[in-house]
Image 1: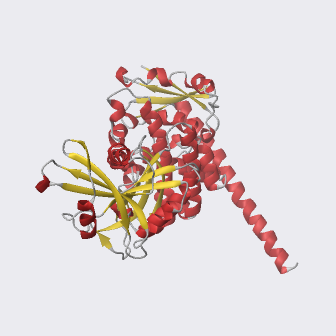
Image 2 (image 1 turned 90 degrees about the vertical axis):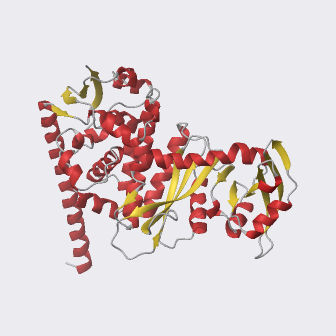
Length: 456
């Protein structure tokens, strides 16, 4: 036999063997899950089953299918990572010891909890580009669902503490903190709805200019119309200013650092008092490198001349100075609230600097955040203001119940659910509710079972 032909035949046989093995694993998994459900499962993670409906609504299974290339086993392991993120669990020994045999594993269509090594191998074999493609598709879905208004977007260079053993530069988050290893992430949020759109990760010395340009190019695929970015002082610079000045789709509003040049310019502006103690002005800022000009806005606080305080801003937008400074820019602080409320999903700490793994895990956390946000909307006040950690502790991992199968439907019975959570009317008779929304109630990762809830 020709050596080249022999090599091709061997590769075909090898692929066939792997495919057959995965098929057998899935058949075995389905059989085991059927047996577990037939015997009924008792546990405290019954509240996490509410998110199954939300994953059907946002199309999580299709996102995982595109990311893994329709590898059934990998898709279910990815679903486990998403469910762990919803519980604010970061992997390790604790999940393996405490999550198993309480219905958590079945949520992903698996008979057992996937190990840390399995998850590591899954994330490591998928590239940064693949993760970014999933982010873009998810953002388009969320925009169509009304999660974004898309008029004002907030940029933030969010740094995550890393526990990697690699040698790398250390940073400090404030003057009072010690230096630590940090992963640089660059997030884009809808400033009006405070929902995440996309993110990028940079290496240790990744310039913020390059990361912002790359993020803006991704955002154009979600928001092709004109939008305004609001950012912090780290985004101010000649290169980014020129980038947004020549871009007829995107504008930026950015604070200018309080250098001596800025302070002098702010004092020379002609201010107009808006209300007592607050005045605004407008001028031009020129970069010394090549005399590039940008619109310059000034804020002045206090009524006593000797106590004046100033803030300077650069912008490429044409809106009035009053609207930009008094109405639009204050929305930027919503991005800080986002990290305070939802950072525990996967944006607080990292154990590795392997960018494939970080991109994969944080992208799956974005899916968990989207499902959790849909669930949060169904809660009444003040429960819809809970942090993700509080929601995970009080609902997803604290509701007693049991899980069983009846005909083609998995029945989750939840005991003593507080009426004020307003969930019974949202999830009882779930197949009927989903069909009314033109959503197929069959759950593909649970072997086309339907899901329903009972409350006692």
